[in-house]
Length: 273
Image (cartoon, rainbow, N blue to C red; front, side, top):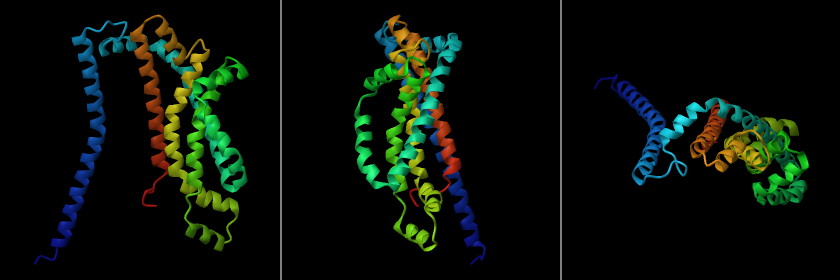
């Protein structure tokens, strides 16, 4: 029997595993494109064969033409929405992380104020938006506040769960090593909570944009939300669809940026851990 046979078999297995991984990677890239292309084809076919009026639902070709023709105007309106969404994202998530930290270390505070957070979150965002506009005026502040509020609760819940998910054995080891509360928090609790945190941040990346747009619906002269209202009132369906797609592209881009940051920061298998 050849002494090198096990080594050759191991190399073959490794090569087969690499080919399978490459195939899966391409599959993950191509399948979303196939799905999007299929939906666009169905959209186009329904418009053409049912003879839907353009002011009700334009074809993808008309929407693409409008998107290209009015791209500068769309970008001008996307800029304030992006600023509101980004500021609200930062504000809401920082507040949620700070609140979760207090809740974990002071259970009596959690018992007193967590139901309040649930109550505030249960109020529809379209009901909170007019109140914030009345309190903060008609500038950027209410839109940022709405985006921050809509990000706050999911991050709060996930961060509390992540900070409390530390194993008892790890906590006991930190106590044996006479670690301080800050060392336990930064070297153990915070590290353990990162997968939970990024799960909520990816959700917040989309909801922050929704919050900014809802805030613009209540009162704004510019932004994606304001442009949606104007296109609706003018029965400009092509511009309406193009504006919605513009906002969606921003949300998806924001989500992908958070995902890339997660891959760079969380380098371990959270499920295995």
